[in-house]
Length: 405
Image 1 (cartoon, helix red, strand yellow):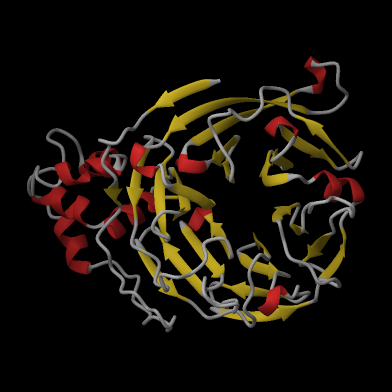
Image 2 (cartoon, one colour):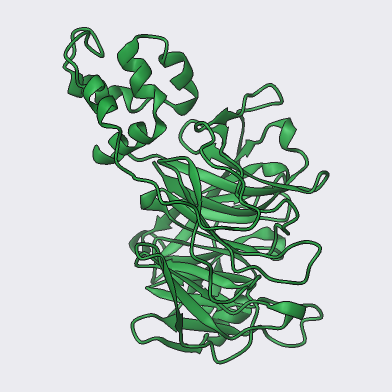
């Protein structure tokens, strides 16, 4: 296990851009703004005056400059007017990166400060290992951090925050917020048909699915609905067939898997449901899958992995053919990473965010059956720990999402 200290209390927390939103305590729908680029900015940048780089064509120079880390943008803006224009607009910068198919992963962490009762988003640059901040979510200050569900469309650089509950009221919210990394802006979207918390959620083919959860008085729901981000509309889908709150959920092979998880004193095996959007049908989860789902899940190499909360915090993978779970070869999650966890992934890497926002990066290797004694693919993991700044010592993660930009 490799430990990397990349930050301390002196490390600055960079802003992705200036705040472009105002708080909306009543969750009013925001005014739709044009996503077109500023024509004057485009023309200014294309002027044939001083080159972006002496001795280089502008297209090559631009390709280089679009790879400059965000934390260096302020310093780059003082070089010349063209650099000032280029690094002064995050929307233009990220749009051009997307056009050139440049993409870097960013880990967005929804955190809760237990000392002051404040929620906030922090962003970890997974390429340069630097921390950034974004504008606050447009919601009331007294929302409970644990009732929300967050999903993302990584390739679009967009995440959604759904549901939740106010700390001083037993009244689940039907709130939906959208954050766009390219614009560094929050937008209040069309509300869900029903307020809910602790529900299953996932993205399939660009559509956002939510299912089950709790309503008022912690009554468990069986309803489900789907959101079309392009149309901005919600519609009901088939009910789950059982009233169930969700401990964890995952999307595997185009289906939404929802589990309620184990509850003390563990007398009854947890329930689990699987939704197929192609048929709009729910079916019961396989026994081995639901009984062995004892942690937070990610999908890597098309396989379902779970970072267990017990079993010495080992990583395990689900074998669909045998309906069983197998321990992944390698050490357990480093003890430095303490519960509660938030988990996500990118390519063959698993990111586990623990208390105080220390991050464990699990590098997954797939072992060819021809090189092992096994008759099927097996997996191994090695861990790298990235320490968070000391100023994060009071923060607890509630959710983690990977976006590309």
